[in-house]
Length: 192
Image (cartoon, rainbow, N blue to C red):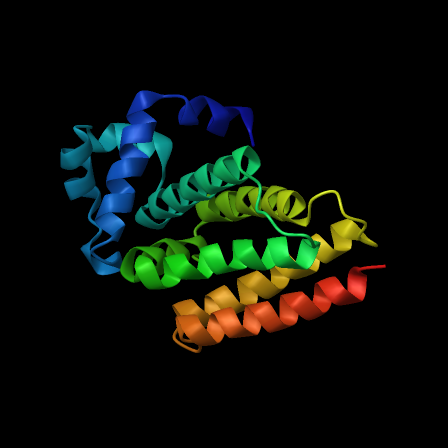
């Protein structure tokens, strides 16, 4: 995480902005209004634009903030299971459960993370770092050949299926089934 983002994350105003943005996302992308968020967060538009340069950037940072919280909770309570495969699939299940439980908000957050906005590009890069940390924790201490490569390929697969879910190519159930099957096969292939 960049020092700039780390400093922002410790700012109570930024934390409030992320909370309000996630709440707004539950209404859907079209219902996220920078002005409404400014009112709800009790901030000026100028202050919000100091943090994020666009609506997509703001929503993407709220997604990044959610990922960071998820990662921290995972580090505090690593997934259980005898094998790396079991633990990683438990994490995948938790991610895809949010697609069902928080469908509108999750779609809104994911839609913005794939936006072409330059500010979002940096957020995507940071989300990749968080993904690597999440998968590293999920894999645990078990012996995995070419661990970094496996984590990278899981990231590509997760991105592909998530994007397919966001644009409607996959239902949450189809996405979960595809991820479980393909990630399971990958872990088997990379295990000794």
